[in-house]
Length: 456
Ligand code: PLP
Image (cartoon, rainbow, N blue to C red; front, top):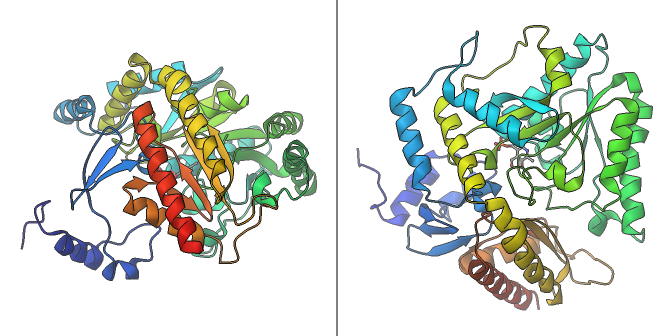
């Protein structure tokens, strides 16, 4: 058999990839005609592909490479840990030093009473843990009927059966029999697309009050929890009006509904604080984490659980866990990632340098004829493409057509910017410099110009 390495021609690698590799969230049939782009290496904010293109990654992979690519320290820690203890599990009253250290560090960084971590291999697995944990929690408290979890339409919480059900993506629900029972979805606070003529703050309140309506309709004794991202990421970087979160918090408190903040994207500096919950001023009972926890260098996720919930769960055996819960190599890598974030003052860089500069440049994109609104919190931003800024109209073409054209133009201009429908989104590595932000904006503007020209 041929040895498959970087040195094979791109077309040959693409053909092998199309023949044997089933890609996530991809129409795999199309790969035979147009091969996948092959990324061969990366450093800082820059990817290199098999044709030698240098591409600015304004998505930090999948919102995860917070410290940037190519940090040798993480590779060294992983190699050391693999030599010392490559694997051991955390089931049946066993543990190891990397997981002890990581759990203690996360407890130190997380707000208030969020001092307990249940580890998983990914964000999806962590949200599956949350489904089981909140239902078990209420059963332990003598309220087994409290099993419904309320989420939001257009939310993304993962791809497993449980987390895909928590999510509110209709295209996902259409495949494979989702959602599972006892998951209920309310509307999202997306004023641009759904706010009509309502004032944005009134709209935020209305959308939050849908939670109260749902609780009253379903019955207070049936609802276990509400889950949401502090700032919706994969839904299109939807920043809620300021009125939204205080009202959600009030409702969760009033009806004793557990609040789960999905921090898989927002966590570990993305919004300028360690957690998006701090930026949005909310007090969750559970936070889902993954991605930025290891900057994507190793697969790891988890649930950070309040002392009150953890104390109840601790009263019984929780019949749940993953082979890779607290994997020692992933834990050691995550710990090193947190050390870098902390010791190199990456959050200060976000707050004082990168985020203010990016905000100024990003918001200036609204001068472009295609761009209706620009939203940004910390280092996650979106722009809405529209044929009519005044009416916030959608394009006549099927939703996502123009966004796709723009994304393809970005690719051609060596910029990774994603589209969600006709919103373009960014989430660059947190360590991006002002000069690199200039390059990002220049390439985005060129791509928008080309997209605009193509539509004329
Ligand atoms: N939750 C949120 C908010 C996410 O954005 C994602 C992934 O994009 C997940 C959960 C699922 O994480 P994973 O892909 O690690 O399973």
